[in-house]
Image (cartoon, rainbow, N blue to C red; front, top):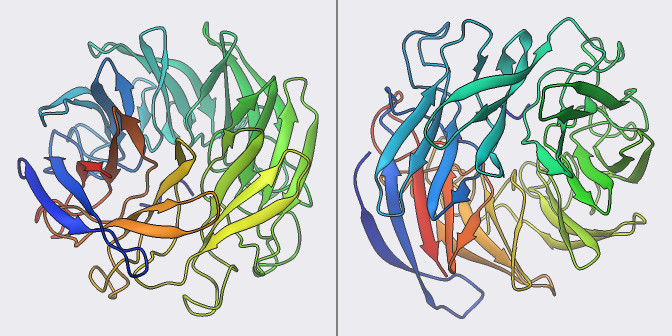
Length: 407
């Protein structure tokens, strides 16, 4: 599901790999996590609040936790590289554990989710920039009415939060197939739609986006019988009144399959990524992932198919639109380092016509490895996180980094 998953400043110049052309970009490590009280394994996008970067780590933070690796943190990093832990999740008194989503800024208060803890089904929490945290809603691991396991971030629409849970919501799929929910800022939750586990999709691992009162999202599986019989995932829409419609069901052919990331909305069209299962013959024949666009009526176009080499493998994060260019990350690829030589991940750009270029290929050392998260931009600089690399902690794999890239 969404929870798959320090060394000071460093700067270096690299070439932009785009066919035969090359231009320089600047990479800088802002912070490398040590795996102790400062947190470890950030797998979510950052949030800009007044020029400072706020985020979450999936583990680390405190030993006062049910897991020896810690239950995760909320942190702040300045653009000069100073890190401050705002909250360490303790896994008791109903607090959540293991946040793997980004934070949503609502009038100066940050809202996020934890996939676990709370009432055994994860939480929606709120925290001030000063670090005062409280649980807004605790999902029950045994109550399938609302759902459980919110791995994606909440969004706010006219003062109400909306999101999705990867599990629960119904008695289908054994543990439930996931749900879309609404949550008032006073803590009243309501299920909008519960996935049934068939053609409507299963397991929405990310959050939803809003356009004119309609919510759009992806399910990791379902929608058909491909991908080992579980279905290859869907793009769906849900009205705030709870009416769901599948816009597109992936077939794991050239169109891709298994979307792990949420969508973005640009000029009337939806853009997203598929992590694998189709889109090409690479990566053991299962495909290395795609970048796609889709109309709100369900017409899908693949903009780019990853080949499994220097161009990257497994785009598991949402895209970022900057003046018509799409920026994203791949968890693997880009070289031969990390794990089985699959590469340590990339930051890439895709033009509206589908031309892909690698801005940076992670080496797995102090620069970081395996970016699961989407990018954000502040004044023309891209900021992101890697779940690994950055040092020798966390069993020698590194505990993750916060980085900056200037195209």
